Amino acid sequence: MPNPKRRHSAERTATRRAHDFLRPASQSDCPKCGEKKLPHRVCPNCGMYKGREVIEVEQ
Image 1 (cartoon, rainbow, N blue to C red):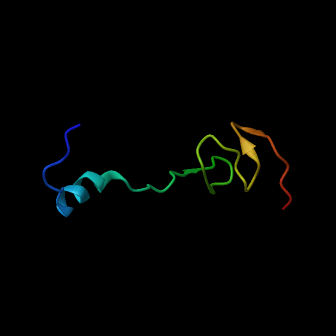
Image 2 (image 1 turned 45 degrees about the horizontal axis):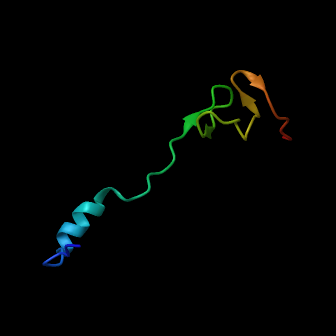
Image 3 (image 1 turned 90 degrees about the vertical axis):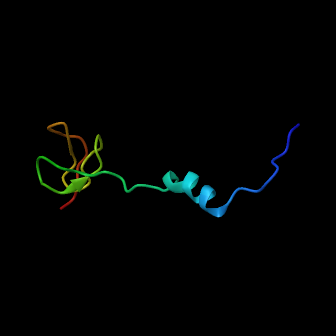
């Protein structure tokens, strides 16, 4: 098996790892109450999903 002749520089390693970070989860506005929520999820504030009440939320 061939082995590397020289070690990779720190710059080369950092360049490769430039995209290895986490991005914040995107959020959308609830059409009913306007609160921020994750897309394709029930709104935790009002309990609505796709125009109908899915869960009952105490207020």
